[in-house]
Amino acid sequence: MGHSTPRSSAPAPVEVVGAAIVDDLVAPTRLLAARRTEPAALAGGWELPGGKVDPGETCAEALHREIREELGVEVALGDRVDGPLERGRWPLGTAYAMTVHLATVTAGEPAPIEDHDALRWVTEDDLYAVAWLPADLPVVEAVAARFRPRAKP
Ligand SMILES: Nc1nc2c([nH]c(=O)n2[C@H]2C[C@H](O)[C@@H](COP(=O)(O)OP(=O)(O)OP(=O)(O)O)O2)c(=O)[nH]1
Image (cartoon, rainbow, N blue to C red; front, top):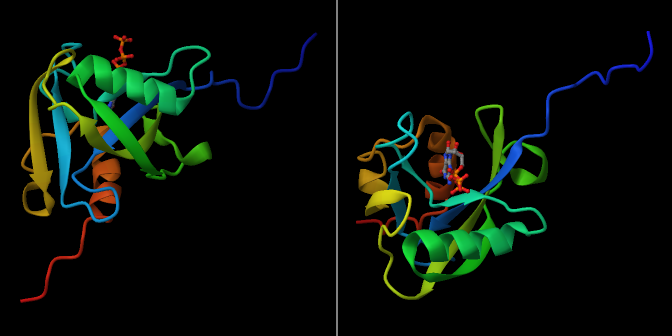
C-alpha cells in the first residue's frame, strides 16, 4: 500500500494572464482582440493578449510584461473580470487557468509585435466578428457585460 493518493491528483493548472484591453476602464465601448500565430493548433484564433505567469511573478507583473512584449505598450490595470474557478480564474481546457484584468493603454500604440499577426478593436456590435478561441468566449461575454449601456434612442 504505502502513500494514500489525494482524491484529486490532477496537476494544478498552469497560470496564465490575459488583458481585456478596453478604451475606458469604467465605461468600456471596445475591446482589443489579438490573432495568435502559434502553435499551429491555435494559430488564427483570436484571444486576449497575455501569457504564462513566470515563477515569482504576480499576475499584475506578468500582465505588464506580456503586454509590453507582445504589443509594445504600457497599460493601467482595472478590475479583475471574474471567472468560475478559484481566485476568479477562467478555465482554458483543463491544463491552464487564466486570470483576466481590464486594462487601458497608457503609453504607445498597440502593434502585433510578438505572438500575434493582427489586432482588432471590437465593439458590442461586432464582438463575434472575430473567431475567438473557444475558451475565450465566456470571457468575452463577461467583458461585454461591462460595456457602457447604449444610449436609448
Ligand atoms: N494568452 C492567452 N492564452 C490563451 C487565451 N485563450 C486560450 O485558450 N489560451 C491558451 C493558449 C496557450 O495554450 C495558453 C497560454 O499560453 P501562451 O502561449 O499565451 O503563453 P506565453 O506567451 O507565456 O507562451 P510561451 O512563452 O510559453 O510560448 O493559454 C487567451 O485569451 N490568452
